[in-house]
Amino acid sequence: MSTETQPVKYKATDFKSSAEPRWCPGCEDYAILKAVQTAMAQIGRPKNEHAVVSGIGCSSRFPYYMGTYGFHTIHGRPLPIATGLKVSNPELAVWVVTGDGDGISIGGNHLMHALRRNTDMNILLFDNRIYGLTKGQYSPTSEKGKINKTAPYGTIEEPADPLGLAVECGASFVAQISATYVKELVSVLVEAYNHKGTSFVHIYQNCYIYNNGAFDGFTERSIRDDNNIKIENGKPLVFGEKSNKGLVMGYGKFDIVEFEPENIPDNVIIYDETDVTLVRMISDMKFPEYPVPMGVIKRVKMPTFDDAVHEQIESAKTKFKPNLAKLISSGETWEVK
Image (tube, rainbow, N blue to C red):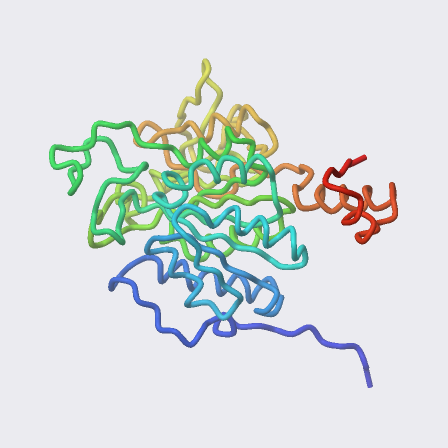
């Protein structure tokens, strides 16, 4: 009889808490919650090896509904806390849940530095293009001209671009997906976890109460195949309901060509998620001129901040023998060598 220990098979329900989720009926946060729990089950680690950190907003209620460790922090500040958590407990899988207000406005500076530092954690940015928790004010990603409580005549600002921001800040893993693509969302979350470094996942999430239909132009089921493009490394950039459209290189931008589905032209681009030029061009595509990219946009290997911290500590330990008593009694001035 075999004495080998069989791996534990987890279910999504193993990562639920006893708290009942309290979002508005129909909120796509429910779908994202289920996707995260399903992804964690597929990852195969127990709930006590995961921690979910959030800021303030509708999405930031997330830790209450997870059976994992959780930390509901203050507005715009989940990322520095998550960084400290990962550095102090490197074996922990750290997930940050934030929104377009919490992550791009109040916490925009922390997001920028978290992406460049490349701490091994996963950032999930729920983007509904509105402040939902405070009842409908425009957010950094609200579309220009959007009429709302704080812009009764329409917003006059150009919206922030989370995808482009992540790419230009040097993130090592960048993905984009809609909450309506539950199966694909689970897959992206697992890939984000498997990446060594900061994984940034931009999630389109409809707010049925204060910004309903913001993404219908490219997520509504009957038209989305013509208005989305699935990004897969090593695969041609093809889209359309009949897979009869593709992206080819034009003069400084992509051109869209049409063809018979069984005869993809040789000049249709084969995607490379490590190619900086392609990554930037994909992140620059704006709907409706171009289809909205969905999937993993960028994935490159880079040193991580948490590993570097521990390497520096170990290196420092080899240079001298710690003596706390001697240090305390050495006078008012300390010299670090």
